[in-house]
Length: 313
Image 1 (spheres, helix red, strand yellow):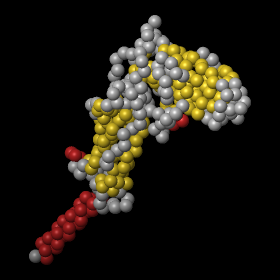
Image 2 (cartoon, one colour; image 1 turned 90 degrees about the vertical axis):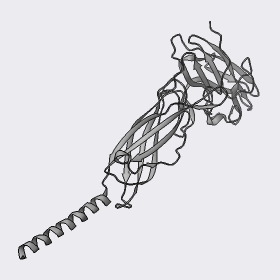
Image 3 (cartoon, helix red, strand yellow; image 1 turned 45 degrees about the horizontal axis):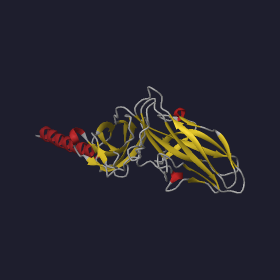
Image 4 (spheres, one colour; image 1 turned 90 degrees about the horizontal axis):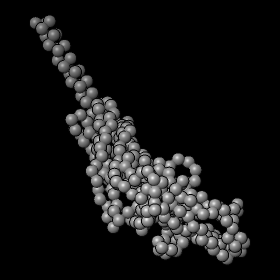
């Protein structure tokens, strides 16, 4: 059976931190949930492994009851998802792009921890033969009996060995132009687009955006756009970005370029080749139309005066 490789936390989602686990083991008022000390080290805040398909890692969690009464707890595997707030959440139900819950097997699903005591519960992580290479995020969620406090969770970051192929896609580029505030001049636009992690590695993305008229005329770049949170393979992230000072030019074209950012084991971030997409919107160039109308009216006036002169000659 393949031997698990030591955890490479910096390589596997260095920026993903479960909100409930910042700087210390998950803790409620009277009890805590933490990675057990063992072959993978001490003082860990989460679990991280690199395994070949068919491999297995054995580890454990420690539940400590600091209260004055026995604590009844259930343990369940969970899947990781990125919330709209850009944070990692662990869910025991619902859809996840890559769900490793079937690979996480706690040795006990229910247990009681005596007052003032702690219990170590082993678990195994075992991606099956044929598991697709790349990054997965799951976790273990501990839920106390009713009235004993909120549930606690610890993430598990797993990289399944094989070819790592990072990639992003950009789609659904939409442009909404609002020139009502200044119909004869420049206005504002909002460009909405969706980024999807189409590869098998966790990535952040740095987007760039510009708007232009036909043949690139009147190009305007958006301000610096925020880097996305880490996106797990298969996840989508929708962005709406304002662009100011846009001149209506009959047909506006939005160009979105997204640079994937891959973080290595040393914590260094490498930008990869950009992915681009475009979208369009029709606008009415009121200033140009007004100028055309004025010129047409002036030309018509000249023609009429010329006809009158000819008639009276």
